Length: 81
Image 1: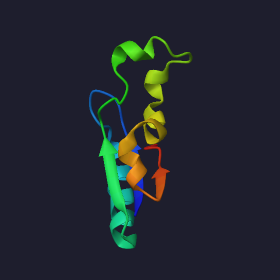
Image 2: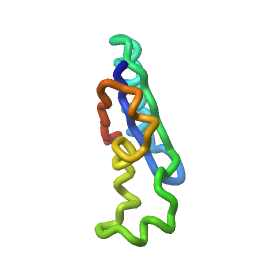
Image 3: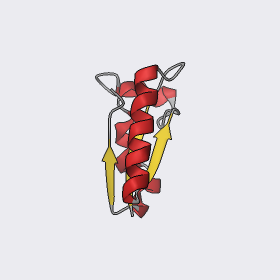
Image 4: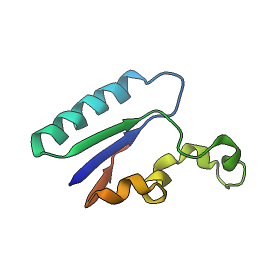
């Protein structure tokens, strides 16, 4: 099974991210893939202080750190903008 994964970390999901989310969700449905959109940070806030370059903006590391993703054959991360 394949997954398309997107995330947005912020106060409110902006319109461009909503459009991107809709488009990729439709694509996933059309080709039989699962789709996941997240607005929750994977790493706890205190962990971010230990990372250079502001890792709080790079939650994409969740794809290889979170065992949840191990169930998929392939994972596509698509940026929302």
